Image 1 (cartoon, rainbow, N blue to C red):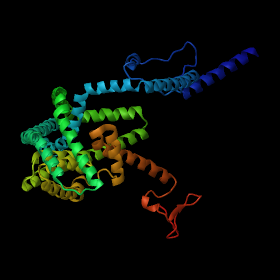
Image 2: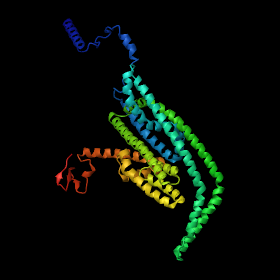
Image 3: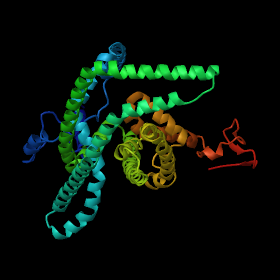
Length: 475
C-alpha cells in the first residue's frame, strides 16, 4: 500500500511541475535545478548597468510615507520661520538684491537688447533661410548663415541709429541748454519787472498780490545769489558722480550688446531648455498653462514696447518739424522731451508738454500759446490716428485700467514702472479674465460681459435669464 501511494504522489508531483512550466517557463520549480543560460545573458547583465533605470514604478513604502508627511510639516514650519525673519530684515535683503542686480546689469541689458533686436533677426531669417536652403547642401548650414546675417544687420542698424541720434541731438541739446542757462536769469528778471509794472487798484486783494510777488521775487533772487553759489561745489561733485555713472552705464550697455549677440545665436536652445524644464517640474496641464501664458505675455509686451517706441520716434520727428516751421526756441530740446515722455501711455504727452511750455513761454509768451495749440493737435493725431494704427489693441485694457497701471507702476518703480506697468497689468488682467471665464464655463454661464447687464440674472438653480427678452440664454 505504501509503495502504491508513493508512486501516486510522484505522478501528481510531475503533473504539477509540468503544468507550472507550461504556464511560466522562466520559473524554476525544482530546487537545485537552474535553467540554461544563453551566451548573451552575461553581456545583457553587463549592459544593464549602463542603461538608465526607470524611476517611480513601485509605490512608496509606509515608512517613506510617514517620513514624507513629517518632512512636509517640517518644511512648512521652517518656511514660516524663514519668512518671518525675512520680513524683519527686508532692508538687508533688498540691498542684497540690488547688489545682485548691479552685478547682472550687463546680462539684463543684453536680454533687453536681444528682445528688441529679435524682430529684425526673425524678418531676416524669414527671407534668407529659404534662399540659402536652395544653395546649401549641408543640413543646418542655411540657418546658421542666415542667423549670422540677421544679427549683423540688427547690430549695424542699432549702432547707426545711436550714432545718428548722438550726432543730431548732442550739439543741439548742448546749445539749447547753454542758451537756457544764459538767458534764464534775464528772462526771470523781465518777468518780475512786467509783473511789478502791472497797475492794480488799491483793494486788499491787489495789495496782497503785490506783496506776494515782491517777496517771491526777493526769495528767488536771494536763492540765486547765495544758496545756488554756495552749493556750486556740491553740484559739481554730483555732476562728476553723474558722469561716472553714465560712463559705467555705457560700459554695461556695450557688454550687454555682446551678451545679446550670444543670446540671439542660441535663442532656440534656450527656449528648448526652458520648455524641457517646465515639463519636467510641472504636470502636463500646468506646464501647458505656463507655456500659454508665456506666449501671451510675449505677444503683449512685444506688441506694446516695440509699437510704443516706433510711435514715440515718429511723434518726436513730427514735433521737431513742426517747431522748426513755427520757429520756436529750444527746438531740439523740446522735441526730445516730447518724444521721450510720449513712451508713457496717457500721461506722457502732458508730462512732456508742461516743462516744454514753461521754457518756451519764458522766451516768448505768445509762442508758448502757439506751442500749446500745436502740442494738443499733435497728441490728438497720435491718440486717434497714429497710435491705434501702430499699437492697435495690443494690451486689451480700457482707459481706466491704463491709468491705474501707470499710477501703480510709477509709484513703485518710477519712470520704468510707468512704461512697463501697462503691459504687466495687461498680462495680470488676462490671467484674471481667464480664471473668471473658466469658472463661468463650469457653471454653464455665458462669459461675455455684455450678458450681465441690469436686466439679466441667474436663478437659484444656476440658469441664466435675460429679463428684457424673458428668454433663457444658453451658450
